[in-house]
Image (tube, rainbow, N blue to C red; front, top):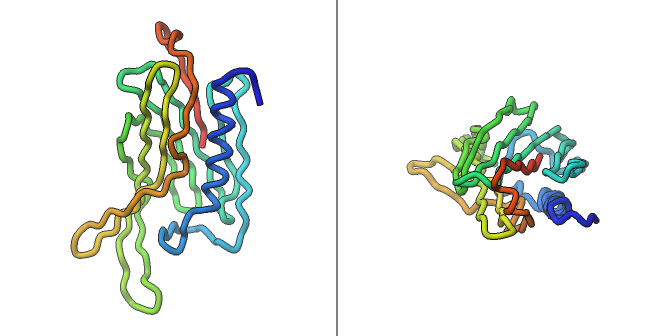
Amino acid sequence: PTDNPECQSFADIINEIKKNFDRIPLNLLPIPGLDTTKPTTLQCYEFANCTGFNCSGQVYGTHIQFSFDMDYCAKPIKAYLTLNYPSENVNFTRTITHSQEFLITKFEFQVPSTQIKIPVELYGKIDMLRSPGRVMVTAGIVPKFNFIFPLKLQPFNLINNQVIRVDTTKCGGMLEIAILI
C-alpha cells in the first residue's frame, strides 16, 4: 500500500491480473504452450516512480512477459503494449487506442477425438475510458474461431473495470503511466 493513488491503483490491477490468470478457461480457450498441470508463478511490481508495473514469469509452465505503458493525457488515450511469449514466437510492441483489437497469435485447434482442425486467432483488446481524476481499464483476450464463417466469442478479461486514479492536472505536460503485463 502507498499514499500515491496511482501506485495503489497499479497494485490493485496486479492483484486482479494474478487472480484472473488462474481463471482462464483453457478447456474453452485453447492457448498453445500452456500446461494446466504446471503452476503460475507470475511476478509483478509497480515502478518506483508510480508510472505503472511489470509482470513476468511462468504462466502454466510457460514464460510470459508483458507491459502496458498508458498515456492518459493523449487524445485519444493511448497505450504502448509489449508482449513476449517465446514458446509461441510471440514478441511485439504496439501502440493502441481505446477499444482497438490487436492480433496476438494464430494457431490451429485440434478438436479432441477427431481429425478436425479449426483455425483460431487470439486478439487482445483494451478499453481505456478517461474521466476527471481516473481512467477505467478493461483488458482481455478475444478468441476468434474460423469455421465456415468467422465466430467471435466473448472476451476473457484479465483486467475488468479497474480504476486507475490519475492526476489529470498534469496533462498540461506529458505524463506516462506504464503498466507492464
